[in-house]
Image (tube, rainbow, N blue to C red; front, top):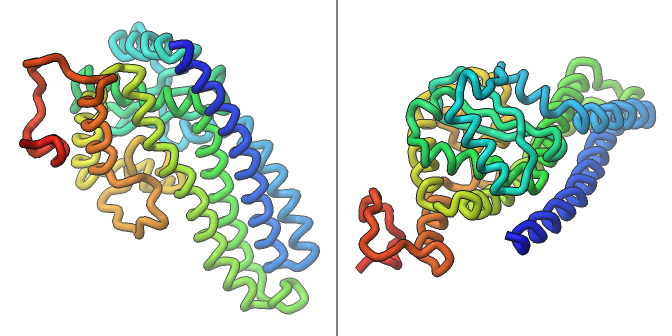
Length: 316
């Protein structure tokens, strides 16, 4: 446990460094868009907006994400099993108790947010509680707690805030830009900024999110000591996401990367811009973990898992 805690602290420090690098990269992109749209004056204005966005995202990213999905804070009085499970798993992860929120949605999903473990929140949908078993729900919670421990939540919420701001700035350029004296390259510059800046921001955002999901899966399984619980949860969540819509996610698409699985119904995007690794790969990795020496199942233990779900290399 002590070794895992030290590893978690080292990962958290690295993620703080990554956050700084991310904010610098997105600020540079933001200023570049301003230069394309408005020349030197556009750069100054964009830099001022970027500085404000940095500060706002750092302090308010958690409340923004929760508000976007109309998440309501719950207590042990109203949802005892869920809150008690979060408290127990937080102790196992060496974390302070995060705030627990409920999103009124039929889709099974969840996300974590907050700038640090002391100001963190876990939000789950009502569909998650309805469609998943207690073991599966705990696997999802542990995954989100791993994000909190590694400060992935700060990285992802800052990325979401900047992606939205860059898209908005590009739209402003289309509305008001276009003349040679206002923009460095006139209308062509405005058009290029409007087309490619949101794509660049989305690419940065997606690459960050994808890299962290595998890590959170592995660490979440370590917290519960049950990789199959999370694997089963991911299978149910990914299957349901193909046909059950979450209206708040469809409205606030910039927050999709924060969820344990992409909440957008029927999303079909190139893997370069995908915010999550393929669910089947994550599931296969977790199921393979269950058969390693660290998690090896006891002989003849009854496990409700079909043969088709066992990694091919383990079949006989």
